[in-house]
Length: 110
Length: 113
Image (tube, rainbow over all chains, first blue to last red; front, side, top):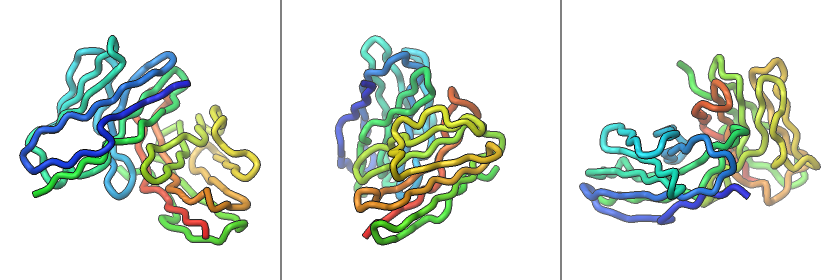
C-alpha cells in the first residue's frame, strides 16, 4: 500500500531559525512529490519535484528530492511568524492520485 | 485568474440528514478531485474525475456518498444520510491533467451533530 510519512509531526521554533521538514514515501510507480502549505484553509502549492538532486527554491523555502532514499526535505531559512502552518507532503503515482502524509505542524514564535 | 470555488464554506447538520457540496474548478482544468480531511490528518482522496468520467472512486463510501460532474465542469458531492464520523473538511481540487499540480479550493467544513 502506498504510504507517505512526515517528520516531525510538530515543531516549535523562534523567528530567524532554520527548519528542515522530512518526507519519506513508498509509492508504486512514483512520478512526483509535492509540498503544500496549509494555514486555516486550503493547501496552497509550494513545489513539485520529479528529478532527484535538483533543488527547487522560492524565497526562503527550498526543497530537494532523493529518489534513492525515497525521501524529500523542505527547508525554511530565517523563519517568520507567517510561516506558521501545516506543511503537507504528497506523492503522485501513475494514476495521478495524490497520497498525502499526515503533515508537519510548524509554529514560529516571535 | 479565479481559483477553485467551493460552497458552502461551513455546514452544520444533524445525523441522518442529507448534505451536498459544490465545486467549480479553475477554468480549463480537466481533472477534478474531492478529498476529505480529518483533523490532524492529510487529505484523503474520495474521487477523481477526468472530464465527466469518474476514473478513481475506490475510496468513496458508495453506500452513502455520491458525486457527479455533469458537462465536465463543476461537480457536486452528496452524503445521504450523514453520520457523526462524516464530520471533516471536504476539499475540492483541480488540475490541468492528472500529471500536473493540483490547486485546492477553500473547503467545506462539515459538522454532523
